[in-house]
Amino acid sequence: MIKNTSRYTTPSTILVVEDEPTLATAIAQRITAEGWTARVASDGASAVQAASQIKPDLVIMDIMLPIMDGLEATKRIVAERPVPVLILTARDDEADKVTGLGAGADDYMTKPFSMRELIARCKALLRRVERAKVIAKNSENEKVLDFGSLVIDPAQRIVTLRGEQIHLTPTEFDLLATLARRPKSVLTREKLLEEVWDWVDASGTRTVDSHVKALRHKLGSQMIRTVHGVGYAFEPPEDQEQEKDQR
Image 1 (cartoon, helix red, strand yellow):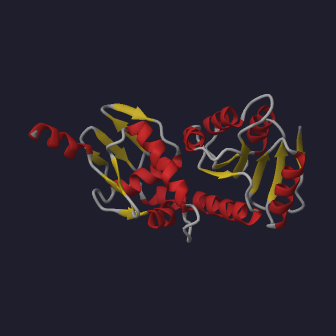
Image 2 (cartoon, helix red, strand yellow):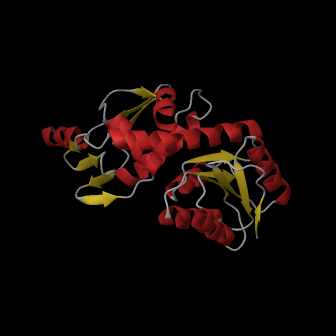
Image 3 (tube, one colour):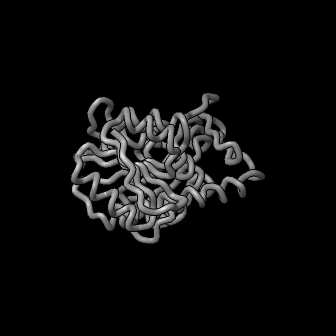
């Protein structure tokens, strides 16, 4: 079932996918209070249909849903049209979060959560959409980042590893490109939050960690080095290959 809870005519439309009526209503009310338009779907299949029809600017997606779970719904929605997805999960399990990010989500929150933080995450994701347009325009003439077996094309937003194209979510691509533009340089989690997510505080540092794990799952564990207590650094694969040859 899909219902319209909008009271305002605004440029930003947020699709809330939640099967618990009380929570869905609370989220929708807070969204409309911010001046956005809220649409609510109570199952995964309705969410896919609604996303196709209304083309939302942002999707808030619960994982545990009837008919079709949130992960499958997320995959179908982002496959049809790129849109930021914020997943909601009742389990504080890192594997579940990485799976959700791998399905195409851009961020996650663990239940229970504060409405204030939810709205802050929504604002950050909506800002990222506008910021991504500027970045894409500025990247049109940027040179390809060629690290031998790994090639990153900022203009086309394509990543190939050993000649095979790797599918990355928009957030994963931005995170990888941000690190790769400064190889071997350590970037703090706070700096990555600012440059990739456009967050001005450190409340989402665990989001950075989960996205790094998702990238390592797709690209290999050696390409992004952890500097404990600080952040991450990109290690060019060509350097790793040279080190192997010298041994």
